[in-house]
Image (tube, rainbow, N blue to C red):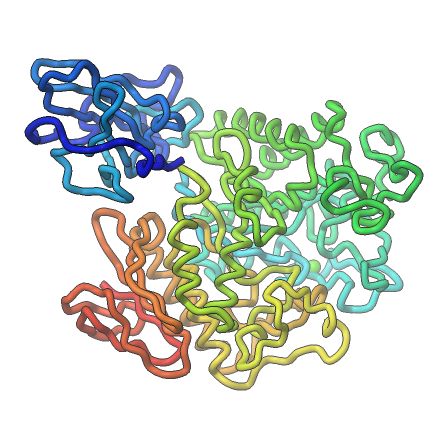
Length: 633
Ligand SMILES: [Ca+2]
């Protein structure tokens, strides 16, 4: 919340300036039950504010240090010749504030020259003595600010064991099981495939048992459950992908390689083949709703009846207003994390379940986290397919009780338009970023991304003429006919490299959809789920993969790129320049999407190294070649 100071009567500072003490170096008292040494983002510092006293009757500290900090504030106490207030603030946070004198006069801090939006600004409050809230992840556990995630579509990734391969009759190859499995992923983990790309988090497709029959897709074609979204038994693992032991071994191999594992969890529905559905029909919404078949987008509306409509007529929708249904699925989800050792969930279509389910999952998963040492953060990333309404996405994000973050659909829209398709100026991307990085609140870790399994492959959006005009086109028109092939020229790969430069130099948990690092071609579902290409890469594909790897290693080496704060330095129609700084180090990123070289401004007037291209440059104006980027220090 930002205080509107325009309406307030402010004015002159009442009294001579005095030095303000450093923020938050005082000792605090530990939160009851909180750990003694938690990860930085969860630490609370005590920030001290002082104001030289003259003849005021009262002074209040007002600011954004608390939800009601601008409206209620904190009364300051007189200590000698000064008014003093101490308030807890998040480690590394910025605080905007004013003093309210005698309940009538607003003044900025005369001892602090820094301002933002007309308020006094204290930047990057840190402290050596801090408190930790109950449930905070401990120092030594994985810090999710360091995460780079790859979505591994297990069936389409690597076949490590032909003995477990499945086939469903009546299904054509594109919708058929293709043999990928957990042993195959484990092999690639151990070979260092992900580590070379800087990826340290795997999002794996749903691991539980799925329907063994074919099902009709919305396109009228018959599919197998290779995607994992037709669960029949939450208590069994999918034998087409291997055994429980294979999955446990995968997680262990990932951990041994410094990687985390998230499972996709499909908690909206079960497949009608499920015996659970036969045994407990009351745990599911009836397909009948006011006399019509309540299929989403058919007899029911995706939004109005979104928490009860069936995605298709063979996917009964869980009714989580029934406590037994909620208990059952939450317990199964927690058990899966417990017995595999995995680290969190990607929660599919989260807006289609009752809030109570997510709240209960967080509560019970936190109990599981408390049994691990050092206590980790169990990361939940949600999918809410909405690219226009940030407030709606944010309504699910609350690290204390709900999601850690969501896939950033609104940012992806602008990223496609500005960087990949070039239909909207880079200044528009800058304008979104001006509010987006901090939009989802303290400790939120959103996932920026450009490609996923529901959209046409992003390489085609980077072609000279984007294959689809709408960034969120589903690409189904060419999924079975006139399927796209690999572009035979460098420019689309360069544009994707620019998009990856942005992703891998931005805060949050960047997502890489398997194969996008080599510009894997494909139209909409299921053509966007082609088997991973392991051999015969073109020179352009090899070039792109090497760029993604270089960016991944830069992010790994420089904490400022993953944990830092972004400052926007300049933007034009074709260029964007920003810095990432964590207090210890500042790196500068410049991206030119245009087809001609551009000189960008806003950089420091100093000699710098371009770490991405191993060259020397000199600010404040630096030439960025066409369709390329620099990461400078
Ligand atoms: Ca296999």
